[in-house]
Image 1 (cartoon, rainbow, N blue to C red):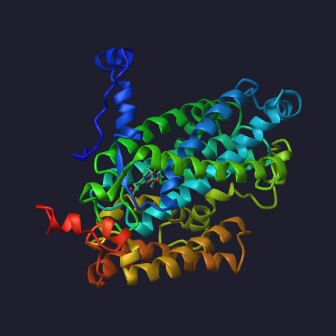
Image 2 (image 1 turned 90 degrees about the vertical axis):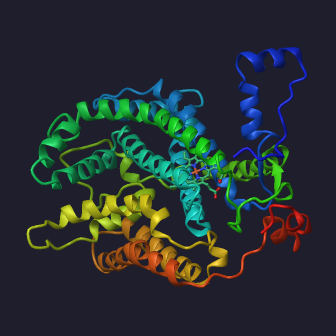
Image 3 (image 1 turned 90 degrees about the horizontal axis):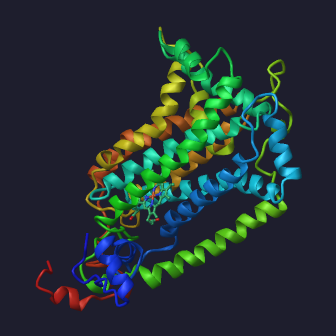
Amino acid sequence: MSFPWANEYQPSHPFMKWMDEKLPLPRLVYNSVGSGYPVPRNLNYFWNFGFLALICLVIQIVTGIVMAMHYAANTAVAFDTVEMTVRDVNWGWLMRYAHANGASAFFVVIYIHIFRGFYYGSYKAPREMVWLLGVVIFLLMMATAFMGYVLPWGQMSFWGAKVITGLFSAIPFVGEPLQQWLLGGFAPDNAALNRFFSLHYLLPFVIVGVVILHIWALHIPGSSNPTGVEVKSESDTVPFYPYYIAKDGWAVGAFGFLFCMMLFFFPNALGHPDNYIPANPMSTPAHIVPEWYFWPFYAVLRAFTQDFFFIPAKLMGVLAMFGAILVWFFLPWLDKSPVRSGSYRPTYKKFFWFGLIPAMLVLFYCGGAPAAEPYVMMSQLAALYYFAHFLIILPVVSAIEKPLPLPYSITEAVLGKDEAAQLAPTAR
Ligand code: HEM
């Protein structure tokens, strides 16, 4: 939305005036991330995570392009080319560790970004499109990360690819031909490695495209804020530059510090030791585990252990695993509360903190644990709550709960009063 009080772009330099007539790129920047973009004045640190996600995306693309210069997508040498990049290429170790840990950092940032959305109701109208595009980005990120993990062609790369592509075989009738078509063979091999490399290089740029749409869609209503009350007057906002550029800059510094700690002191902490063993189709690892960011969904997959009449357990697991993400697409319509922010929704808030968060943590834990008791039962209970939360609890609670009184405006929430807005002709 262009707020009537947004600063107007006024180029003073003749070159910038000329540019503004021919290709108004500086105007676009000014209106999107400059002084021409008014933003709610009360955004807390959770609103820094979108910007951090952008930084992660850039880190992944830059380090990935450099790594691709030294990588060969051939099962005979893929493992060695990655090791060679780390050992023999100048700064290769930094590129590899930044890329591998960057994927983890990206997912940490995105999970916080998404859960911020759950708590503050960022998915609600008028930002449904921002949310829907976000879910598309998340699915693309998962596909990209999965294919990236196959590339070093270590033991976990190979067996992870075998398990995950094997899931397609659960689809009735077309499953097995589909799996063979995806792999280009009966098992992960050269054909699969080549196509995964090609797609792993391509998808980040598709993500860039969807991120542009995501931010475009966000800039139509503008950002929400911790109160969930929409902007009413000029005093509710501050210009993006310098205020949020400075705050995002601070967040990037803090993130950079933690990221460097990871890179320089614990670069392999999140990696699986089996992936330092070259892929061997003749030797199955004791536990095949995906990367940590897939664990909650992997736990949902493994929570189905019994066939249900003619429906095999594996098929139900696959459907539930995809369903656990696809249900997010329906959130804007499942949540009927007129109040956006969890801070003013006492019942919803309890289910968020004492239901959804613990269920998600249990799923995280169980997804990385062996497929044995008590983890299977814990996954089943947590998965049950997870689906009940979105499909039953959220619609019911949002329809019947009595929210707390909302502040009149963002300014009132911040300063305790907002006389100017209440006297304005548009005031309720
Ligand atoms: C590459 C991944 C992503 C990038 C670069 C990105 C970027 C951003 C940025 C810069 C913002 C504005 C600042 C902020 O509110 O934090 C934003 C807002 C938002 N994002 Fe994302 N995002 C990504 C993924 C996602 C995902 C996966 C979801 C949800 C599934 C999502 C949902 C949202 C929502 C709902 C908002 C509006 C928040 C509000 O104003 O309350 N985003 N995103």
